[in-house]
Figure 1 (spheres, rainbow, N blue to C red):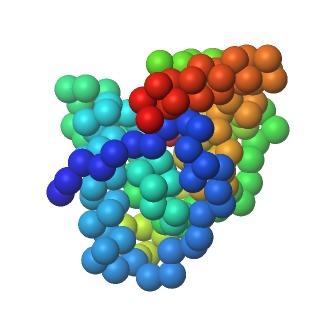
Figure 2 (figure 1 turned 30 degrees about the vertical axis):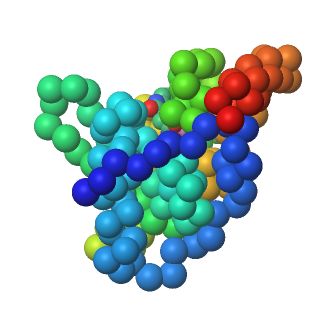
Length: 170
Ligand code: GNR
Ligand code: NI
């Protein structure tokens, strides 16, 4: 396994719509394993392929805490087929927008169809942090970031800061 570089805003790849995975082969599984290692090292509770520059519809999640047994989830071509009317609010962060956190309201529960690490069709009803994280990651596959749900003033402020930072690094 190898650790990958996580790309940050304003990288345009974070705004693109990813392509479906057509075949769960060794290359796909290797990328998912590398993404998992990258996520654990960050550390983060989720990571979507475009965050490591892979423009494919796949993501990894592990919401267990440090010290607990690891419980990784792999989602390939995930699709939200139902969302609850009820909403819940979490303070979200994103590895592509480091050290920035804001409350985001999303459906409390979602039903998601997806393909697993071994190529089998799966379905999950997620709630709580798993639901929030899954929705955050699926948004990444569609070029959507959590800052799209906050006020325009706050979003423009954080974008400006990262544009400035990117210029000073380049
Ligand atoms: O590590 C992460 N934590 C987090 C906290 C609240 C809601 C969503 C997340 S996902 C984030 C990692 C990340 O950027 N995934 O795309
Ligand atoms: Ni993110």
